[in-house]
Image (cartoon, rainbow, N blue to C red):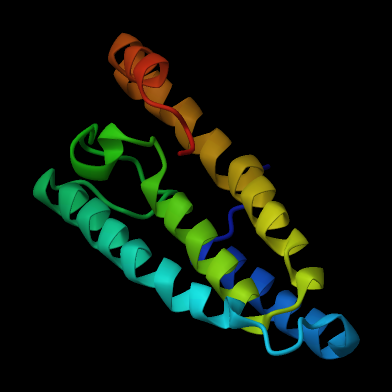
Length: 148
């Protein structure tokens, strides 16, 4: 049985762990750090990418939920640059959150988020897409990277 936790829940969990890590280790915060500006700088394009990714799914009349069987194979918009734009968005949001906190001790949670998304979401999605779309999906994987 595979652990099925919705990706925004993983993001929320990692963001909360980063927050509590920052509170437990305040001495590691960067003093007067301008890095807090990085958060909004990352979040604006992340929202744009997310909006376009969701829009492409809706145009194709296929669900966006990762544990739902897709009705179409989406390869337009942000899916031309990465196979996982919504997960790239999650990593951008998490990186921005760590920057806002200004504590280097929170950065490992970006890596952990990437690993859990890969292990518990992306692996299952890729297997299902290969079963459903076969050679078309394998060709797409050869041309488009998983991450940017």
